[in-house]
Length: 427
Ligand code: ADP
Image (cartoon, rainbow, N blue to C red; front, side):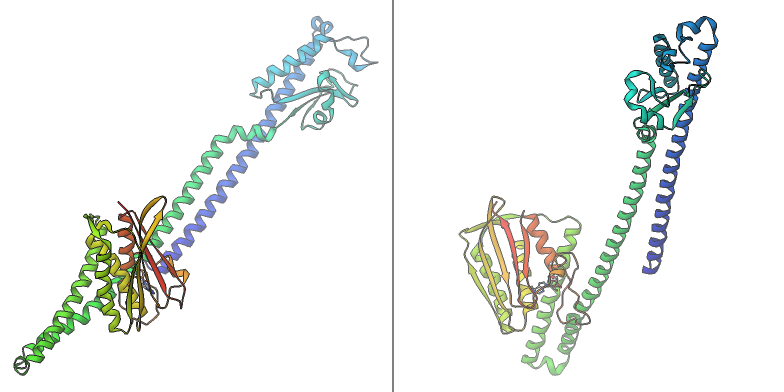
């Protein structure tokens, strides 16, 4: 996909996602409002039914005497009700509110402008009940007393939210799932894109790297077919050596690529054996000392490790050290001064050996340090392609160290050289 198309799709999808979140919150807000209105309507109906029933009690001549004391009512309103009235009011409210699905999370009061008349225990909550939105006039049972019945819910918003909790939770879960999946998709796409860019860099690098030895071999072998060269032993030797060297270079490069392909296909198995640490390091160190000397430098080997034998895969262990030394020679040239060191090291309670390769090269700035162990990664050098490579060496080192249960780390500062340390635990 072209970058512009991807950016366009990402922008449109992000906007659509914001739209979905916005619509979702609008619907949730609306649902809460609607539920609240429904709640208020239910309370209103329950209160009206209670008032009607109180009126029925008063209208019924048989019942009236049991609930109302008619003589005192004009003098003192609280004296107008019998104790039986208080019980009847309580049970009427309880039954009606239960019927409406409104459970006991409220206080009620029969009041006039002076205060709560019934029930007495709610006298202290006069202000709450009076100012509550759920009030009804009881002028039907006492015309001149300014009598009201009020109900106050302690946590009306909470009750409403509880009724909608299931839907709200589901809506939040689905919205979050969509956001997370979208983010993961975009991240994975970007990762794939980066990998594909790195792969195409790798292919162009590889082609470049193979082209030189192939054309040198081709030229040298063509020369060997010429009669004037065939008769000159020195020239034959020179061209044969050229072919041999370039072929070795090609072989090493193919080996490199094959190693990494083997990783990708999970074909790598370590063949552990007991290895003489000093000998193994000395051998690799000596080879790279020769290369370094060609560029006017040297490799100094310093073995401080008390460990004599290391239990490892010989080939991969040697490749790891070679890769680090090869990089040191490559990047610190001309005049690479390299130190190959080995010493005892303890990591998380386990003993092992720490092998370090330090150089006097250009160093690596912190922003690149966390990337250099990634597959195909090469530090950008602009248009300069003076140091050849595939970006696989350090990836290989890291993978092999991890397969041994160890690790690799870098200490480097631009302009002050680099130091790569690999830890191999004792088996
Ligand atoms: P390459 O084949 O490109 O050398 P590596 O995986 O070995 O691949 O290294 C990755 C990158 O890390 C290199 O492109 C280089 O920029 C940087 N690098 C590795 N070793 C050194 C070093 N000793 N000094 C400076 N830069 C280094």
